[in-house]
Amino acid sequence: MQPAIEVNDLRKSYGETEALRGVSFEVAPGEVFCMLGPNGAGKTTCTEILEGHRLASSGTVRVLGHDPARNDRGMRERIGVVLQSCGIQEDLTVDELIEMYGRYYTRSRPAQELIELVELDAKRDARAGSLSGGQRRRLDLALALVGDPDLLFLDEPTTGFDPHARRQAWSTIRSLCSLGKTVFLTTHFMDEAQHLADRVAVMAAGRIVASGPPQELGGREELPTEIRFALPEGVEPADLPSLPAGAEVAGDREGVLVRTSEGMQATHALTGWALERGLELRGFSVAQPTLEDVYLSLTAGDGPAPDSTHLEALR
Amino acid sequence: MSTGIGEQAHSERAAIGPPQVFSRNLSLLAWQVLYEQRAFWRNRRRALASFAFPLMFLLIFGAITQGAKVKGDGNIAYINFYVPGIIAYAVMVIGFTNTAMSIALLRSEGVLKRMRTTPMPWALYLGGIVLSTVITIAVACVLLLAIGVIFYKASVNGAAVPGLIVTVAIGTVCFTSLGIAVSRFIPKPDSGMPVLMLIVLPLSFISNVFFPIYKPQALVEIGKFFPLRRVAEGIGPAFKQTQGSGFVGHDLVTLAIWAAVGCWLMVRTMRMLSAKD
Image (tube, rainbow over all chains, first blue to last red; front, side, top):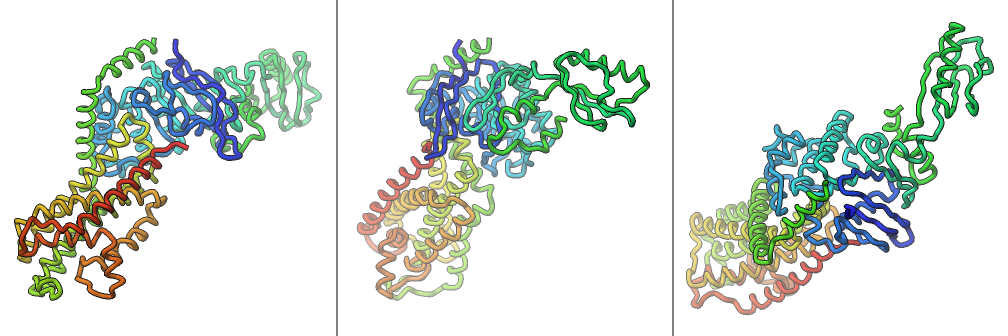
């Protein structure tokens, strides 16, 4: 089975700066592959090379068996692209644009179907220039799908969306996956990668620092469970019952943190102990390390941190 | 499972032979011209800036100069001097200014980039824009001619109309190619308009467009160097009662040289716009 995307030791430098320093990966047909990384990590450069907008400095790239640098019509017949920010002929209507872009492909999807998919029914006769930001992004998606592509590139598809619009976009993207499309996605939102991707590659400073299914990324499954709570007055962390071997207790009375590989047993020991003594453990929580924790440890020190407001939403 | 679908689709798509590709490209080009025309006339600001200005100038100048004669030019009625001038001006504004601005805008807004992700061949897309411009110019010329004849009694010399058509055609190639060529120097469309006006307006004043100029000699010579005056002069015989089919050899030669240079620069710009770094 030929991979949809094959990248081998891809490098790209702009003068002295190395944007990509030897990136290799494969994307299988039908897979949703997500490239995750902070701004400036090289995601966009990599995507643009795959789309044929930029030339690699070295390394080999195959997209659906084609070399994107040759930019042949056959490859473009089979890919759909949602670029990060991309203009449109603003004086034409939604309907006209879908029809116009549809003509460029030898096989295109019916306009009606696309308009329903991206929920722009009410705007089909509106000029593109009059659409809101979110509506424009949905039109972008419709135009990327108009040629019924086998491979879809989505470069930060939900940047600038409100939470509701993001959920909608996610469900649209998931429905595309069920059609058997291969999706290459870049994002700097952890939750987006978690929701959509079959496989995630974390990129930092021009390299892939980790890759795998989102649940297993960076050995996430093996990382200790974290239990947090606060103790009532008069009870100190030293008074806690004995916990499973290897458990670490940190923090003070107002914020205790227990880290352990035996999360269930530790939870049982703590809650049993508290109930027995009639103590209330305020804010009791048990958590696996989030993808965000893994991501932050992987990309630490490489470029600016991802947008912290979006990270807050994960907590 | 999905590969099966993909490969089937691929072979289906690849099954088109060269003759079909040609006829398909031709129909793509025709459709593109149609969409470009639709977009052009819908955008009032753009249609006004390039199309309505020459019409307005002709209506005003025609009205305020009624009965006036041009002494230096065989004592012809001013309107017979002015209609060729304003047609030349329209060819320049629509071919050069408007095209340069549109391409600069398409480029800065990323429409060109989006186009490059589709299978639409680059040359066909730009070809559609150019042909649409040609149509707009043709409509403007016919309208200007009609206004001149109907409202201000401009007299058309039917025998010299072939000269008019050939001059406008070469002038269109010349200005449109130059318009595409200069678009590479307009990274931000906002700053483009003043710069283009700085080229276009002084040129119109020294190119026998709004009024005949005889001195100073230096300005006359500069005007003769540039294509605008050549278009105006080349159209001239169609509004004079002279013999012949209206071809003005030296004007056409100068225009042809400009058109050749324009096309060469245009191809370079098109390559630059489609280049990958």
